[in-house]
Length: 131
Image (cartoon, rainbow, N blue to C red):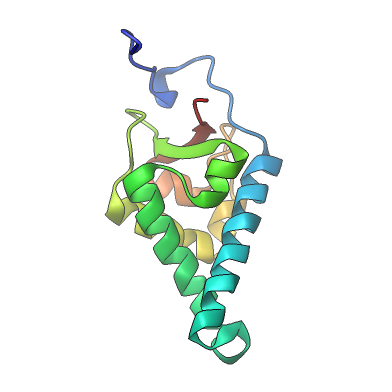
């Protein structure tokens, strides 16, 4: 059975409450560990320190662009959606968000909705995932 009322976009929802920073950080740690594991198939993070970072950017681009969740986000039950309409952000914006996240500093500059600079520049927001 489908819901006859579509979800309210986060930008227009006065009751919007962002997930905790702990869940966001937990998702990032899970995704980072997966990237470290995969990079071992290509020589390892010691020989190629840039490889896990590149894998993280690609992972975020593909998974957020196509599914609105990375594997870490799936485990922590959060997702990344468009701020104004609540839909997927698409591949290009997801890749840009991953690149900005890899720079670290944009993620530390947050607003009252816990949207980092990387979220605001790409029009994204982290929300709770439906069960």
